[in-house]
Image (cartoon, rainbow, N blue to C red):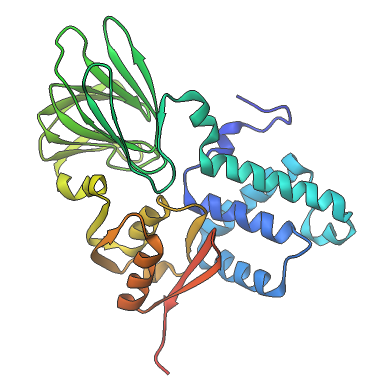
Length: 317
């Protein structure tokens, strides 16, 4: 649905942390209080990855339209009052996306950023909501429908042959066959996995069955596939732990980013390819970042509580 200014709301509702960071940089550099240190840090981030430059260009164009913010070359002539309004609009829009306010208006159950929430449904089935998750319930006489609006949820389903339990999210539907399973939205390449029993998944008109100890692979428009997976590790968040075994640093940082407000921005693509193995407290991402910095020698720069830069490995002097 388009806004009154002709901007497609879907363009704002990006889950990619690169776009969140880009929006933060637009807001920071639009402010009359921006410093030379801010500009230097931005240039380093902007040059680190072509994806950063692309995201920033898109976000700047969007914010210019939403807030009528002029090109930076002419920004000095902008009255401070108007600049403040424009920056406020940018920040409000970014916060609305980050906080999932639209999804919370639509949902029946939700969890905050960094929170794990547990609920029991009217049929006795249990749901664990991971960080920043929202679901809508669509129970009827013929189906127990769940719409996963954002985030990730684990389902422990009570069998009822008369009313199938079906989770809808990210253009796929997952039908339980008396089971315990998880579904994740937001562009992940493993949107579903099964701990016990099995589920029937349909995406793009193609059905597949996923059984205990397996996960669904659905990435970049490729055909659906099923692989063996460490589903206990994938669901360790239910006990407040984030467990990684040989994962890329870029992947680990993106996962930690889900559990905190703002953005963790990786400045060094090469460092992002290094592998991480460890178990971290999902409720203390700062501790996790410090542990990664200490063990891998990468630099951590906290520009603010909402923006953290992860840089190149430190060199010994």
